[in-house]
Image (cartoon, rainbow, N blue to C red; front, side, top):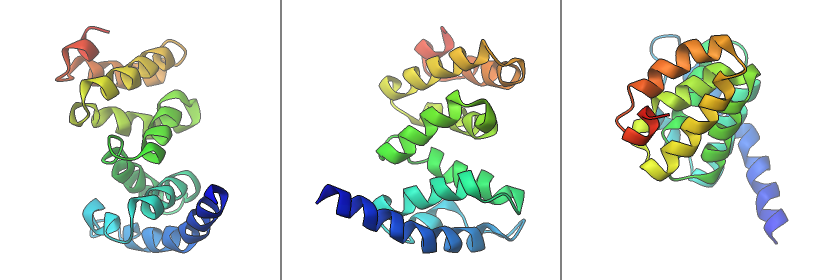
Length: 148
């Protein structure tokens, strides 16, 4: 039964990904995250946002906007949280990882700290990621994050 629900979510994500891409395509007048979140339930919108971020390359701002919308849902959705972990850890998705770090202060400390620790681990292997991640962590409102 669970596999059927997962299969239906994936099947629904494809058309929704196209809708999200269309909504984000205008360079300066694209939809905001609230409008995208309203396209369906979290169980369909979040996977579609993640897929959009990871697969749509043109125009380049579509993926960035999708990642930003995912970052707003880290605390309430496991798919968003898992994407944040992946993007913070992955050198090929460092830009999305930085977007996730920009939203750490909106997370409860018990969720922000593990993500910040992942960022510190990634920063030890990537000079370019470190250059941008460490200042974000240093500005955090969470004392435990700043202490890293």
